[in-house]
Image 1 (cartoon, each protein chain N blue to C red):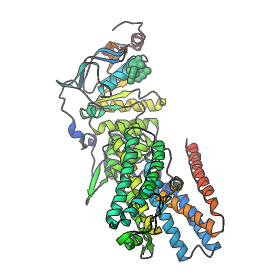
Image 2: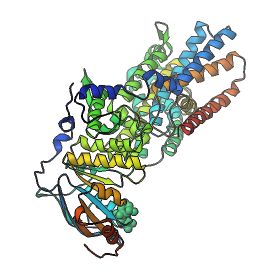
Image 3: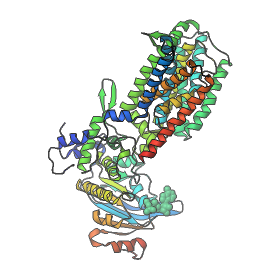
Image 4: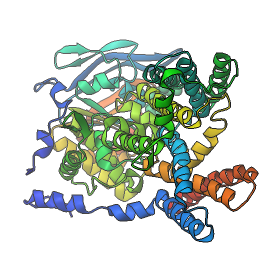
Length: 270
Length: 338
Ligand SMILES: Nc1ncnc2c1ncn2[C@@H]1O[C@H](COP(=O)(O)OP(=O)(O)OP(=O)(O)O)[C@@H](O)[C@H]1O
Ligand SMILES: [Mg+2]
């Protein structure tokens, strides 16, 4: 079966059909979102608008609330106050699957891969392709390998679909985790410190993957403590300090020095 | 290699996909099951040469039949181990199923109804194990250890701890099913072949199988990708119990009598077979072929001890040493790979 360069977008998956059209408006809009864990107020009145194809660098000190924010968007937590909108309708997610149905995918910090399975099976995990043989519905490994190969190609990653994840590099694992998000044609991909524990060369690979997503019109929220990463891929930087947004501006109008000051509190607001 | 400018992407993809780290044959030779198979074949060959009694048709018939019972239960155990659990209750479930079959047939029930009840009881035990493990969240070791005690105790209560050796109107059918043979193949071996094919199919060609492997490797990841983990785990324990139940029915027919110590400490032999065959007690790895050759190797060793006149008291020492050795080799390999 011939696969052209746009195969990634043409992939037909069970979930692909569930994506809601979000038009040309924002991918997601948060208004006044707060989150309390008992007495701890992890997020205070956070408002944020995410545009299609935009990479947002989400920065902040340890405990600033970055992961909490991303988990709310991904449906892991429900906000204590505030609302989320996709297009012009309000949404509330009852779990990660809900968020996924609305075109939001999260790449977990530890990637959530299974070492003992191949790259292709990991990409399709939980939504494996099958084909009917008589009364039996069997897993269609060939189709998964083919489609995963097309996805890796689209991401310009040298990841082989039949390799076991166990034997893959950190960058290739990222590619598998990101290919997963392409499968459902996600509009928004959330990444929590994807570059925290990998080598310099692999960081470059991951940043490239983020650019590939951006080229496909996918919005990305990238949590990172690494200033160079954020400044090389992000269009916008959002700084959280003790649960509040203290800056939200285009990357071209700020500098690593200013962002550092905002993170530590040396600069109050920007 | 994957050049953005390349236009002939179909050829490209084919090239990528055939470029694997290992070919099928190399993967097979790299598997523990292959070496166990070699060891079993070598042991059988040696025994055939040094004793007159091993390679006789009667002895070979006995060996294959005896190993079939262990192997059938090991199929279920392998699936449980792949999912990251353990099932210590299989010996007792085997006994309980055989006892229910025996009591029902003894009371005049037909073979089919009695065996359906026996298998239903096994499935129920698996369901209870599975719910306690997957829904309540208790460790499989603890739950199935408790069930080991409960199921055997139930068999004693039901039978009043008496041996049952009269099976009513369908007795000949039962004896034929468990003790007979077709085309020279003992029926337990026929059953093993069919069940091994079924298990292999389920593990390798269904979504259920993919999910079992995924859960064993990374349960959290499996949950986050939307796999129904609790349901899958429950089905895994039901499958294991069902295999024990089938072995129980066959064993009742073969022995022609059921006592409450049937299948006592069978779990150890079965776990040994699975582990020797390459199932990883940490979860995520194991094969049907491994379970079968593991069971075969244990039976050949057992048989050789008897034929060579070694006291059968040594059996436990051998089986135990084999488990530890198999796990030790696995550790060494994991250490070398890291
Ligand atoms: N599940 C939870 N229960 C209770 N408190 C929590 C929970 N998750 C986060 N918190 C608290 O919320 C605050 C924000 O945590 P969060 O993980 O969002 O920070 P972060 O910005 O991601 O930090 P880091 O850079 O260390 O990952 C912290 O004070 C943390 O202790
Ligand atoms: Mg965090």
